[in-house]
Length: 367
Image (cartoon, rainbow, N blue to C red):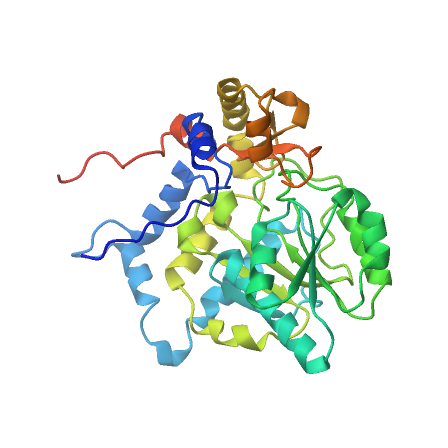
């Protein structure tokens, strides 16, 4: 039996345990909902020995690969996602003709960053990935893995950044924002500034929280801005399917390193993704669980001694620095960590899972 070697802690273990004991987490985890598992029941069927119609359809999609029939599934999923997200994301099909299924959002992000580094070496300029401080950690981690310099900026300085960003730099940004779980109101204006400053698109837009907000933003996310070169998405957070790895990317130009994904893809994940967005519109689950988020924020905040406010993203909550008297806890939850005045952000998934009954093992079955 292979034993897993213990991994070094990525957070202060004592503070991490304290936050988790309160029903929250510093890291953002997906919330598995009853609707998530209902969709899995629907596509898998319930009779392996003599397949029912659902299981028969599921099994047959893997057969006859030489016919190319499997192409239809990822093409249908990507087209349907674009229509599903349309109330929130302005994304022109004609402007992004290159589309690939990916294993969640992370695969898409890594390939764009790696391709950018390769282009820099080919065109002989120094590559730089730019982000706002407190953003999703993966952007910086992938850049460093590709030996690309990562530069952080205070989001309060967005106008200065938009006017001074080097024309060959790549800016990575999430909207809704991973910094605080809210829709960032200045994002579209920021894209306009970046559009004016370079001849080529230079934004990698990450919309992995689409489907996790309950209300329409003030204006749709301008994914079709001339500044945007690629739009990555995932169903992990909105549907609680993190370990099913369902995502995709829309690109203005071909992404050769993702070309093989047309064949090397997970049909089960794509079928599940299609079922989920067919069953629930882009606001549905966020609206259903908004009251659970509010209740969880109140309970977790009480346990931690923090006045938590629900974020736009349904599994997150935030607080100002002054909303807790515990400096160690504030430093632990602060985002960005290097800004003593920054707000705090927590993930409410542990508490919410307890409240809706999807925490712990599934009851029943053979012992």
